[in-house]
Image (cartoon, rainbow, N blue to C red):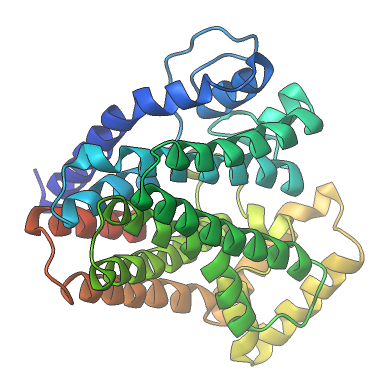
Length: 350
């Protein structure tokens, strides 16, 4: 067995353990919703079929949930004390996914029809709002000052997430988006909730400001690395891994980080890519021509250096994340597990 296989096994164990601890509380929280909203959410999470029957399946890796429980351990508290934080961040994350699928017109997630295609757009919107509201309730129901502080952190992070999503949508109709703007958008869209996840367990246990800051910064860097890898997968990832068509982000006209880096690099490949993207915005290619066209655009992103830059930057963000975990005194085993999860985030495309 290789070291890489052992590492993957360790990460899987960490994620499974966090899921096992939090899953009952997550289901209990969702069951507080109205029956119609419970059905939408349960289907989206993978627990229920479209007609409300038990399915016994769980979607997603639960990275944010795991970080919430690990941050409690990092602050010297039991992992179980971070469960309300893990539940809350998972609810907010899935609120965003329900709305993302609708806004992007995605018809499949985790190899099943998306919730809006099954229950309708209105039900998916309301289901997302229900999860968002429920996340705050889970934390405020603790009726402690630490619970209130965690709720404030979650609210601030959600506001950043919405800002990032807004910018992401706006960028699709612009041909002058800079790399700096894309990095700021990614910081809000993805890093905000990841940084919240990496600190919320510590906040729930009254950790010092220095500890919370270090864990927040760790999550910020991990979140940016996660988005960089996600953007790479959005162009070059296999449908078996992503659950989406090959080159899906190019098909959707998204100004992702590899694309922005390629355009910023200059040169003939960047200029040709800019022309093709402008033509796509003016008139989408025909279905017969689309595969070849998007393949050509992906090649241009790579020739202009966008793919290499994104991979290098993801590695740099991972290094910065690791450094923040050594800047304060944290529980060593939790640091090991947080580092392993962060490494998985960057290596998951390989």
